[in-house]
Image (cartoon, rainbow, N blue to C red; front, top):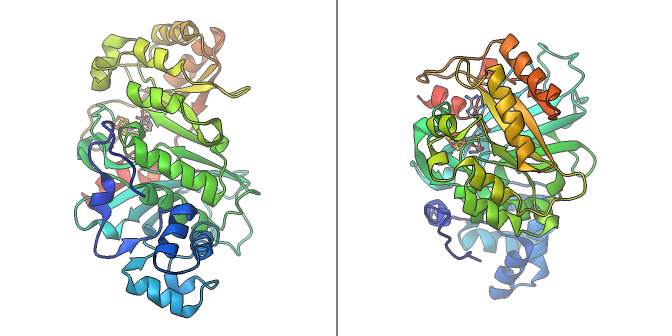
Length: 390
Ligand code: SAH
Ligand code: SF4
């Protein structure tokens, strides 16, 4: 059941999450079948438990209606519980974005909460309305994106990022990562396989520094929950050993990749993202080239525009040369920096963002401006936890 420790992981997150009660959420159907067989039950009961947790989204053993009540009691008596992370607090933006503080109660006091975000993309007609989007309501959205965290805090220390200010508190387990997704799916009444829902691993933390748990979460979400890895994107600050491992993952469970480029050259990138001193841009791009891409798949370069630092037109031309020189099918997502307390940077002006975009486009680079979502609820990475919990 436990995966071998990997040098990419700072420590084994499962140890951190193990309380007296053992969470079932996070175990795949195969493991559950084995577990049930070991306690003298029919192995297929394990599959029923998996279905209850990952398809029916039950959050209590008592709700597993396919199981005889004696078996439910027995499982609970063995110290098991579902243990799915719960939405502790919700913050709604005028633009429909919902930001959640997710509680991992199993984890004890240290590193108890992380953030997840729901970003509906409706027709915009409901902007500003108080819409309760539950399973029984008419949907205000036609597609949506869920953003989840991979760690509580982050060790990478990017200068513009609020999560960095927390330092790394701990890794999240596979169940805690996948559990954020299921908690949001359940809350929004998403019809898996019918609704267009994208998943991005772009919340708190660096997924490739918690590689085993992150990929185990992807496998759970793909194989048990039924989400397509083609609709998942993982973002990395450029952890080269992680990118190389990712390149060898089977296509049917490999999400798409985004690289946080965020600067036009190594000199500036090393300033704003110290990880660049360890793995500079050229090494990151070399590693990305090992990934066997699907037809029409593109690598995304994310570029956070910092006013006066990384948003000048000549820097856009540098980025264009860099991206073209990479020789990869690629696109650039431009994100205006979201301000946060205690970070000495400036937002780019709308004109600077537009000019940067224009310069990339006229250099033949596919570039998109990502609209800031939920600014009024502190939607930038790490902002909610910092502003709510102090
Ligand atoms: N650690 C990973 C994934 C989480 S951060 C990574 O760095 O890629 C997800 C994205 O949010 C990154 O592209 C990061 O550059 C961006 N980001 C961080 N802080 C931000 C802020 N204050 N405003 C806008 N984007 C931010
Ligand atoms: Fe960590 Fe990503 Fe924030 Fe950098 S931008 S500190 S890698 S979460």
